[in-house]
Image 1 (cartoon, rainbow, N blue to C red):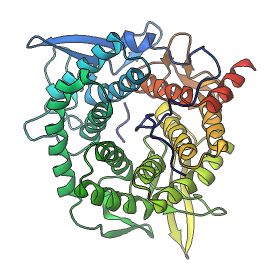
Image 2 (image 1 turned 180 degrees about the vertical axis):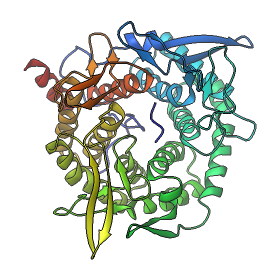
Image 3 (image 1 turned 90 degrees about the vertical axis):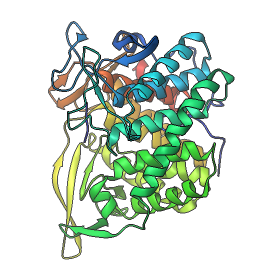
Length: 425
């Protein structure tokens, strides 16, 4: 697990995928078989809690519990809840309903008294309260819990009235906490000559983007001026960490943390496009489009990118520590979501085509020429370590990010056709 003009709203990862775009075939790219294999239901106080195994290793693909962390976590259950909320939109059946309830109960069970969330649970079903990546603090797992609950809150069905009554106070508390963290306008700091908002150096742009997506979901239910002001401040801070231009590296990429860009969780362009669409904010939309228009083609033309650092020398951006590997599903999915969101905003079919082309990474259009999502089994493999080495383990993150990607692709007939055409080659 890595820790590191306006069209109708659709729900994909971070709430985007249009149900009005009809797939071109009845065959589905989404296979939940392996995700079901990772699913484990436990009973706490006569309540079913849905969990997902963090690690599941080749070749037998059985549970691998980590003695230091645990066997399941909020990070992965939250992502899975998002997936099933979207599945329910298209298939409001009892199975999807039960999954949504069990995963939501797990998240609520993991909430600490301070309003944030513990992350890991041990195999003996005790909460891990000591691991540094499990403490109830303002970090990824708390924001992912917020994101998943905000997706549930968007579902328009009386089936969820009781759950919504439980989660709304939790989300309200998180909104208050976020407002306190970002209550003032950002200051800037300089790292290796690169000026960035201090929030980006401290919280990370990847976390801020996740917070923005969650707040934008919630804003559609509660159009609070507090949330609106927060979204404007957070979006402006992301834009302040955008560097390069059409001709100069990094071609409008948004830095992820300090003066570093990394592929995993790089949802800044998506968050700006999505929030820009909901708030009708052209500044956010234009900034997000620039990364999609110029940095994404750079990535695909160069066999995708893992991470790099930039510095400033004589008013010129210098590229440092550039790496192509490892490549993981969590680094590919954000590009798919942002491209599809750009299509929603503009109606330009080239963005849907680009999303489909990026998604073929999962089907072998990558530097290793290996399938990274096996739609016959539903396994998403854990990564490409080099052009000659694949990690064929299939844990929660890689599987759910692959499924979220395929789910998004299937929402758009153009992107799905691109993927279907690649499959036929």
